[in-house]
Amino acid sequence: MTVPALRGLLVPVVTPFDPVTGDPAPVPLRANARALLEAGVHGIVAAGSTGEAALLDEHEFRTVVEWLRDVVPDDRALVVGTGRESTRATIAACRVAGDLGADAALVRAPSYYGASLSATALIAHFRQVADGSPVPVLLYNMPKYTHVALSDQLVAALADHPMIAGAKDSSGDLRNFAAYRAAAPAWHMFMGSGTHWYAALELGAAGGVLAVANVATELALEVWNAFAAGDRAAAGAAQERLTPLNKAIVGERGVPGVKAAVDGVGLTGGPVRPPLADLSETERARLIALLRAAGLAEVWPAPR
Image (cartoon, rainbow, N blue to C red; front, top):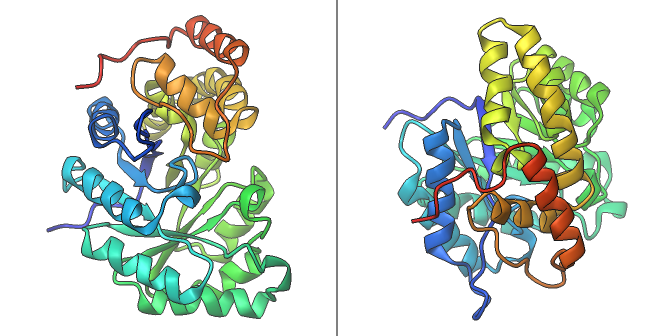
């Protein structure tokens, strides 16, 4: 089997939970992924931040990856979030992902002892993870959630590791993204902010892992396709329409906002898992109005 290229638009899918049992729900999860793949996205990210990875137990993690591997074709990428609090557990998660057919592992920084981790300790952590992973590793910089920022010096120190393929930067700081590109020019760098999708492509991004693409899929693809065709004006115009959606759905409302918006476009977001809280009815109504104004409300066929 040929490993798909790590580039283009990857969507970190939500994890729908059964509203009665609270368990991950396979039918809507796979239906959502199929709809995204049919729209033309280049890959799916399982068990990422948008997929409430931190709230899944290890059995649920395994089943979510299995369910998605069933529907992601061999010519599209399946990237799996495998970050854990210990190096040992992270390696184990990477091995599970590899056994289940993942194409790459997305590895966040450990966070519980984050304030006590030196740069040397973090470098050692990622190096040991990459040494033990059977699939290529993408570093995941998400300081909003982990409160641990991965520096460009750390990227430079790991740039020559043969099992580290790149990084996803969700800092929202284009200077940081540019510094990563300079520190490891051979890596596949992914933008994690829908607001900076076009700008990241201008800076040489290999692609994006965009939560907003769960909802504004065609618009996010329009940025990619127009840019690839050399039509900067069309790419920029699509970005101008994407930015306010990303800010309102992802930036202001987080995972509850993304799941509510997924419901709003006719797919299945469903409830979030506590301690996260669903949007209030007032907030949900505002979000649906935003989607309608953007022409996105219920644009998908019903999940099958």
